Length: 217
Image 1 (cartoon, rainbow, N blue to C red):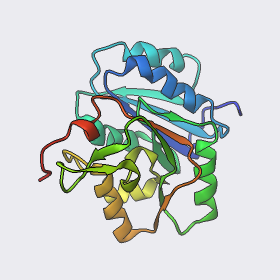
Image 2 (cartoon, rainbow, N blue to C red):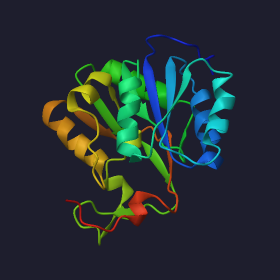
Image 3 (tube, rainbow, N blue to C red):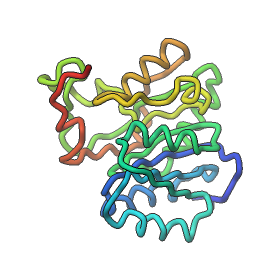
Image 4 (cartoon, helix red, strand yellow):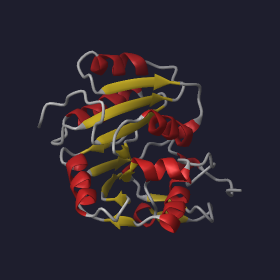
C-alpha cells in the first residue's frame, strides 16, 4: 500500500454519499485508505445524518489530508453524488456506498483500464454481491432481477468531464444509475466489465433496491 497524500489534482476522486450509516462507515473509508493506488481523494457527502457520522469521519480527517467532508440536508443519493462530483478535483470520478467496500486493488485496476483505453470514458461492474442478489426491476417493480443484470452505480468509474457534461445523476425515485448509463452510452463509449471483482456490494435491509415498489414516472 502506498502512502496517500494531498494533491490538488489527484488522479481519482472517490465520492462516498452516506446517511445514518455510522456503524458501517469506518469500514468503507478504511477500504479506500488501504488502496494500492495512492493518487486519490475521498469526498464523504453526508446526506443530513443524525447519528455519529461526523465523529467517524473526523477521526480520518485528522490523519489524512486527502479526505474531505461535506454535509447538506437530506437530498438522497443521486444529488449527494452530484454534490461530490462538483466538489471533486480528480481526472476520474468513482463512487463507494457507505455500506460497501473496495478490495485493495480496486482503484488501481480501474485506473489502468481507462488509461489503456483512452477512447472509453466510463466503466461499470466488476463486483461481488454479498447477500440477496435479487433487486426490483426498473421497468416492472413487481418483478425481481439479478443484480448482475443491472448497472450498479457505485461501481461506475469514469472521466470527470463525462459526469459534468451529462449534468450528473437525475433525481429519480429509482434506477438513476441506469438512467445515467443510458445517457452516457448515447454520447460516449462505455464499457460494462465482469472482472476484476474488486468492489464488494453489501445490500442492507433498507436499500432502495429492496424497498422500492412504485412504478417510476
